[in-house]
Image (cartoon, rainbow, N blue to C red; front, top):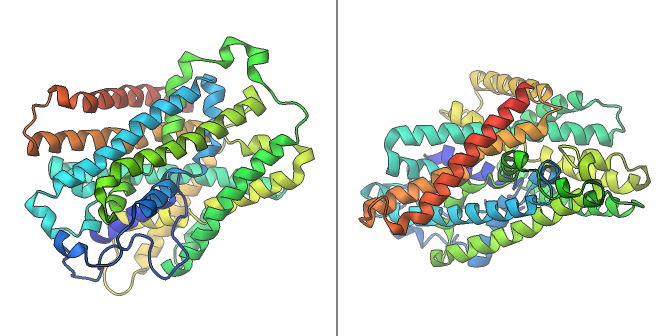
Length: 451
């Protein structure tokens, strides 16, 4: 699990849909809570002496960085699809995903009882570790594959978004498809940056996200009249039931950071406060996604595009604010994209020997970059559909189904519970919710792609 696990955790901290570019500008990795030297054997007993444990406040900071990100660009589109009821969908999604975040901590605590856990450094106890504990080698390989696909599809969505942003910054002189290809190529070059250098880019990316959000709000405030969809549409502005699975898929896409939660839990100085840390984080997420989602729908209504920056582009009176928004979102995404590329490369072809980039691995990186760019161009007009598909199929698996299933499995094993006992009712309800939304959302998203 070693380096591949660490890289997946770092990339998920940067993505989530959030959570993009979150390493601090310091000489130490943000979550370096173990001796990562080759051959080191770090047990739970030795962990507490390494001096890199997280306080509760630091854990909340890292969880927040993981959960909040540029996925917010697609959230207003979920309101266009289903109406104002999407605020309720965000609330339900956050209730479920916060509970599965708690399940991850519970599962790690239970898995620590196994003899194998003593041979795995705490920072190495990731989703693959949990899957192996609960479902054996097959489960470990399956969750690894699903996580890789989730990261790749998220990367495609972000490259498409960046094509939109870069094209807008250029005033349309660079087409969206050309901009997407350039963004993907630049991301491949940035893969070769040392991690310490990259950490400074990550800090800039975090600042850029905050500025971009403020710029979007400022641009909307320059409009003389907002859409106010309820005044024009009536009941359809409140709820459109047929689109609810699509909207939930888009919303869940924003919570793709769960595979990084294990590293935060294992680095906590006081893991007994894990539950409160998770709940506080997701309260902030509700205000972030819910607030900007309602605001975007109120301002642009049924004219909302899959990425809200496409609407901001049509505001000539807000030229300065929209340029700031486009540029900042472009910086945010561009400085994040190298991490998923590198993570997928490591998963597919782990470096061997002192030379990390052999000619073969460099050719594989070139092929991966080309496939990603071509896919982004192919779906450049369907970014909302791809986000919904990714959320419904892959993020639903990693953020909802797997955490509930693994905790249920380990609870039954170590606490001697019957599977269908009343104590497991919440686990079962979460699993039922996840399966229904995953099937319905995936089916509708595939239909949208075909059409």
